[in-house]
Image (cartoon, rainbow, N blue to C red; front, side, top):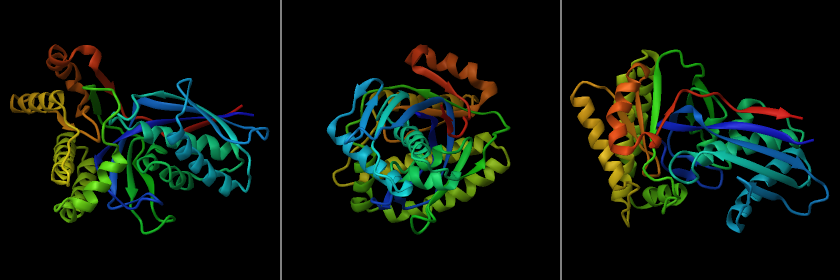
Length: 324
């Protein structure tokens, strides 16, 4: 019988941006994220012994050869866990633009890990599921949980996992995505971060910065200080993107609209309307603010970007599994 899982995207408030073991997806640093209710992936996995290879569709379209190989390699991990050689039929629906810096791979692999492992007969703990999801996409390790989530970098496969810091966010933290460009980015996260690790002269300092940001961010969350959370996330994002500019060759995910959004947020803050931006590997900008200020912020952004490009997201839930 088919198994369906839903997982939501997460946006890192403190980013890891670099792996020390690309095979095991072990990160260079810890990280901390917010799971979002608005963006998610639904994945249905059906075991079928008649198949001689796995089959994949995303939004009703067959997956290309490159991504098929990546997904099959991930399902091989599931088969190894379950002690089976059964092939799977996988159908995913992505409720988030793919490869546009909105964490589609996080929700995709968290949902695939949950549905495939259960369909294969494994009943994994959430920590075990977090470790498995990490092998598909690093940030997927955090999408297993809802709310505010910490990913421990660990030292090996067993010790690198995520756990919830505050699964039920009981203060008015909210995020708004400004969709600058929903098309696929030119430099993948995986390629971009590895280039920074290998060539940016500032990368060693990045590890120290993240360690400090993690300590300060956890204190801000404990104090429910949304302005401090936003300030820290904004500075962390800018320093991450400074790594891309200092790589060899240098590159950037920013577009003209990205810079326009950053300048507008700076102006709003100067005028007393507090909101802060963060960006991942893509041009789209995410704002962090107190939900009571949502309408004022939208009123300022809509004339510039269009109301249809503004998507409000609240803290979202962890992965869920349905077995029919």
